[in-house]
Amino acid sequence: MGEEARGSPKTVSSKYRGLPLTCLQLTDNFRSQGKIVQWVNATFKPMFPEADDPEIGAISYAQSVAFKDETIAQAVQHHSFLPEDRQASQQRVVELARQALEDFNRPDHKHPVAILVRARSHLLDVTQLLQRAGIPCRAVELVPLHQRPYV
Image (tube, rainbow, N blue to C red):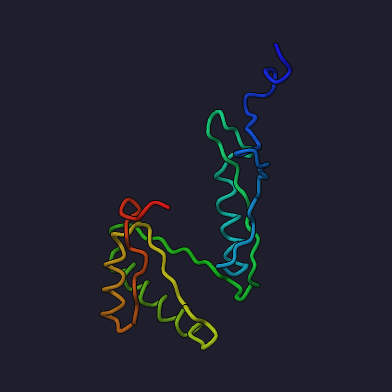
């Protein structure tokens, strides 16, 4: 067996059309402030395998580094409710939105408050709820992935 045939089956060519390729690990998160990046790293790292394994499609988690400084003590809050607690959850969403706007509605914040929902179907309920409470809001990026153009 020739020397090249004994190489690891996981080895991938490092050239494209004769040009050498370099694998890059992108780490900087330019969008989120430091506390959000820390939360994402801490939350998602345990959900991924420790090491990459191309044979089974395993990809390890690549931690991000915040480009922006930490701006607030607690950047992420999680509030969950049982489906039968609809009225309580709606009331809490309004309370949290009002509190967040009081805390973060400053001239130096372009987009002071964001609400993430579990499914797009929840957005209509949340936006209507906030509008009824007199809280201005808008829902963005609502085009389903299967309707977006390929890159």
